[in-house]
Image 1 (cartoon, rainbow over the protein chains, first blue to last red):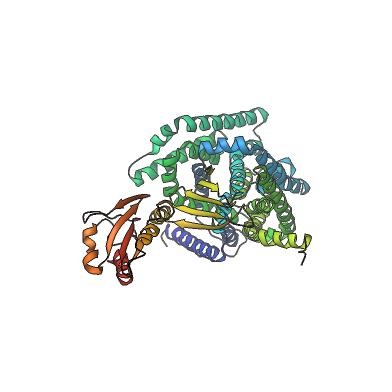
Image 2 (cartoon, rainbow over the protein chains, first blue to last red; image 1 turned 90 degrees about the horizontal axis):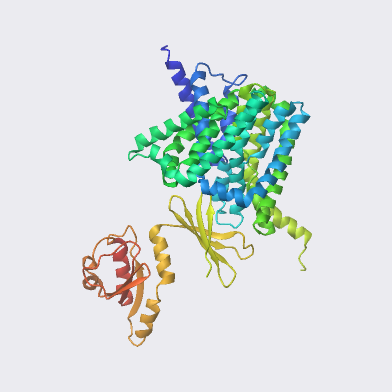
Length: 392
Length: 160
């Protein structure tokens, strides 16, 4: 067989299989992310059908997937959204971080994975999936609700925090020493401030770099710039994704909309590869062993997210039911938990058990999240009825 | 009246106000430009009982219905003495064959014996439009005639 024939057949089968899984996810009304992970588990080492010969492509493609995931996230929010969110919702952001980072960190310490494992697992349980949350709010017709700004402000705060968390975690995991580590974190903070200022004052300058009348040239420029910035950020140990995220913020609104439109299909493709590769690197035989921990984490971190959402909604004066709706909407974890786990695992500094635990946890939460958002109203109504029986 | 404007990061902008009866009414403009009409629920004012997606023409028609002076009611008042004649208003939809064509093209008077007495567009009324008046999607056409004639007029405006 010709040397490129086998990789082409394998890639074709992989994408076609993912397409079927994506369709199934649509039918079930869930995010495709957990099914992509399952697809990866099935094909990977120790799985049903190990794929060979496409690693050079998939390893680069999954890196590109992370870059595009974070670039699109940056494009979604303008600098004024982020600064405004920071000013209004910093308290909600801190409560969210403390409550939701704790379960992961404690679980990692209890499993004996040390402070580095705790740092990584803290991120896994902390960050909600903005993709799943936005989709669920839209489907349930809750975008116009009064608590929705609270939901979004928590997501904005988490994403902003990622711009600091990812470089800090990268620095800690690569064990580059305290001074070098502080330098990396300093670069990240300085970059974040510079980007926010540039985006607020001179957003049109960055947009002019990529702006082009034809979508083909535009796509090449914006993708090229994103990969360049990501590569340089990676070289500076700031993590590639953060570079892309900051670039996304710096691109101003009109250009950002066009960029989001042309990049979304690419993001979907490469992010799918990223999730599959993560699944591939997870040994399915280890899943049963971590299942109890994952279930406990899922239950605890559902409760802590409910608390964080409750607090965020109360801050803006939303009523009791709306507060619970806010918490329930935020329960879903997804793409960023996997990005964080992936980052931790590539450095080799954490226990390899993190891969099956993160996979199992995200599988549970990506399915549980939308369910929680749907059942919160009937459950609340039921509890209220029981506590206050009607006088009839 | 206070219209509250809220930025929804990643989604769009929400503009809303609270009615005298305590309900929130608003419009959510998504970043891609499409709009939703929001009506808060009675039992839980934080949530929405309805969020209805509106096309540009539908949004304009709704604005006209609510904002324009109630022309039909006034005209009907005046015609109370004339048996068998009534007034109605019909929209020119975006897909209508007369979107972009003139009033003369409809040959309304010849075909249905009705008269187009006014056209409402963007809250403004054009009274007694001439045959060279050009319709646009979202216009509301006020027609006077017999019941049968009005039915035909509506059909013409919709499908030619």
